[in-house]
Image (cartoon, rainbow, N blue to C red; front, side):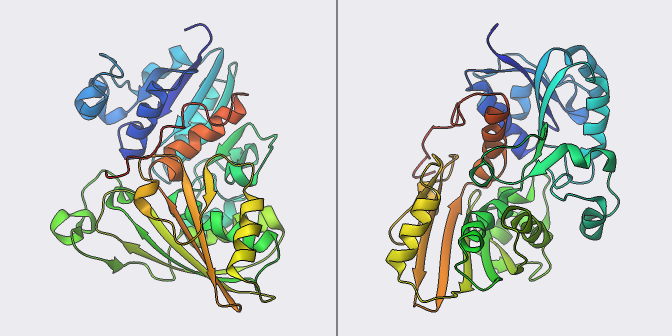
Amino acid sequence: MSDTVKTVVIGSSGYVGGELLRLIAGHPQLELVAAVSESNSGTPINSVFPHLHNALGKQCFIGPAELQQHLHGKIAIFSAAPHGASAGMIADVLAQAKNADVNLVDMSADFRFADSASYSAVYGEHGAPELLDQFVCGLPEHMPNTEHPNVGHPGCFATAMLLAAVPLLQLDLIEPELNAFGITGSTGSGQAPSAGTHHPVRNSNLYAYKPLEHRHAPEVVAICKALTGKDSTLNFIPHSGPFARGIHMTVQAKLKQPRTTEDLVAEFTDFYNHNEFVTVVSGQPKLKDVTCSNYSQIGLATNGDTVVVFTVIDNLIKGAAGGAVQWMNRKLGFDETLGLTTPGSGWG
């Protein structure tokens, strides 16, 4: 194991944490040394995630107090802790690891805004504002290089919207008002049961929630501004779908100049030409072609005046754990695709 990088997962017992553990178990260069979960400390990982029973042996979750022994040398740290809690936990870990060579990717919302005022307007008081300038937020597809030591992952709904919105704005194709309609699977609500994820309610059902008020909208607008330099507005209506995983997103905007669908497909294809995990398809993409994978697909349509961009991703992988590993691969100098090229399940 001398060629591998020691890897820690904070907040490792939720759905995203479980996906991270699965991806790390199959990654040739990452060695899991600590899966941190205060509520499950001492519990075998395979008792919480039985599907990992052949992957991680008898390894157990540890509590935060036991982490110090692993925080030395070169280390990769992922945080899958909840919004609002992640920043404080990260601050504690980085303080303990001050003599280590650390790369960190956070999947909460805590490091998606560049300043504490913007964060506080959406989420309340920030848990570690002194760390904000050490993080950058965006998708690997849109940020070829970054000197920041740490990364805030945009999140699942934001990932699906950014794949559509960034090229539309950067290529100056549209008027800067976007309308988005997204449908997510029940795993997007987290592992803790809630009324919105209760199977009799969710199954064979479809409904909107937080229309025009969802917290990911200002995150997407801020990231688009940082990446493209353009101000925009985003009207986002999220929906709960009757499936466990995946996001289907539709983004609509007014074109500045008439274009054909073929023109737009060609421009998007060129924009994402060097990105392994984004494919621009002819026609409309389908969710089952990407679920359980780090791949995403984009389709386009236009009537000459309005453009519609369809994106499909797996919310737990491309929208969270897989996107985080993709970033970590880059930060560690590995091939960006390492450990992430397993195809989707197709019928899962």
